[in-house]
Image (tube, rainbow, N blue to C red):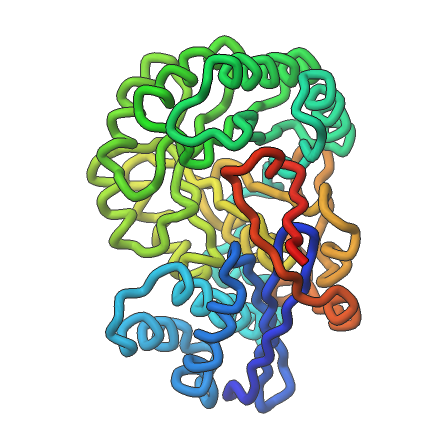
Length: 387
């Protein structure tokens, strides 16, 4: 079996372009991959245009170690977000092909299931006015959809510090959400790398009475020593620190683990070279007693990949999901996933990833001109079209 053709397809939404790839083989099997490269869709497409004829066409899709190793090393330049995203698109599609060829869901090829359902949390549910009443109402709607855990960033366009009025407003939003959903629903506080260390620690202390389940990316990702400062200061509060969506290689995670700067890692499979790299990382994390909560802001194929990893990973914690709060056509672009029921996904079924592309839906929603900027007011409404 050889890869005979790779076809990129881009679907636009109000705030993200989703890049799909269709990988075809000479015996008729077709695998799919997908990623959301924030503000860098054309960069990923350009990379694929060069890398596919060089490394992918004519390869056996079962040889993912060889394929990934060549894409990582043989261009010589250091791999970053674009390279690791392009690599993941192809690699995930290869796993889809392998599962179909063997008649097995991908998680069985990754070691088999270690759980019979996959805990989920909602994101993207708070596209409302930034007031306590609006956030509380949106949180109740998310819980009504079946979620028992909600993630949100209440901090507006904040960067490094917050004016006192903004800080009090942000705290009030968290207070309102906690009051709306009660003590049993988990609240995951997203900081999006906004703050300098003293501000991150101050805000963490202010929010601790609302019993958050984690503080995510409290400082920017480039300086892991600063993250260590924050995690040490937050530790007495008993709230874990999570990070990792903007770490794209094993070598970046090496420093994080050696510093023991986080309690939960959040690799994005689609920006980390694919499922095999992510699976290796989860084993490494387990040596440090670190839990794994894969970052996932993609569509249904990205979600499928994350669910197969979650099913087969002992130190998995919880899975991010956006698409119950997105345009209906996003889920229609690759149907086949289980729905969230009482806070959990069922295990994926069917061979491979268990989803099939609907190219008509993708073509009906073409790539958009977007600039999604998390440091501008009202970014949370997720309306990023610029033309």
